[in-house]
Length: 430
Image (cartoon, helix red, strand yellow):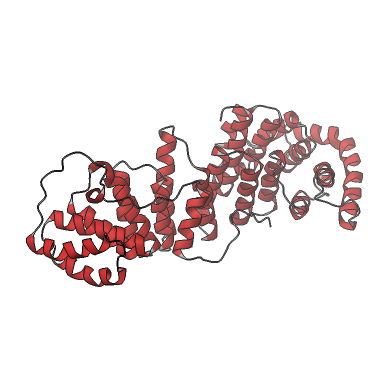
């Protein structure tokens, strides 16, 4: 089977390391904790009258003076903090001590203290409206790093609700679910965000899609993995995304050779067959005894792309036998087509004609027989519709192909759905 480099399973990392990696992966700059409003000396406007309690002032002032001194004793300041917090009575008290804790936490690299300070400030209701979003985001980041994922979600969602949009806070919400091993919930949240942005015509970060795809695949969530595979090629078409999508579909679908063949046909058309073993799997699915023309084409392409070796005994022998059968098939095709066109033609003869013609690149003639097969008893409708759509794609009949693929139901629906995306892209409609 094919395995994608995108979704290779890896060992777990610490929450802090993951947060750093995620930030780097999304192109987000680190967000520094901002100086609280009470300490921003550059602000010239006259502040509103503060309401500090007497007991708080008594406890707070010597600690604040020590912090602002030329040589602060941070250990002594930390030791005094519980008494200062315990002395708080008013919202202004909480806001002031919160600001002190934020700055002390930064100075001493004590992020638990910094988070406590942010929580006090936010809980005071005294944070300026324009700063509520960023303070919640900062608190959410710190909670995430401390693996307090429910709290991280709460703060991050509050940041979003406050209109904070920098640094993609939504992805951190999704990551908070992943950090708790609530993969399904995280994917549901991320999918909702992506769908909302698509509906609004807003750009989607490719890293979001790749993250959702990897999480779904690594956690064996087949439906979600296939959904994200389709989303990936829809939003970011290219050899890399198509290669991942085809690989994930193969690895999660539990498919047999007929389905594998039609997936690898899509891989060929999107130039996303990456490895020699993929080409060998294609040869097995096509079978030189049934579809020799296609086998010859696949071998020649694999050799030309350096994925197969011409001097490999299996490759050379398979190509020789396939080439011999091609000559026989081409000679017999008129007779097979005549038999398949007859009013009493069996389903097997009609399908044999359609499959042989498709493998020879004769899409228009293949379409004729697949269309006829659809009206016969015992037909495998999903298979025939898939191959009818492929024949239409090969003719450049992209609108017809999309309509055909959209009729496919059952286990092949995911395969046909990817083919429909490809047909739409070829038509230039995506």
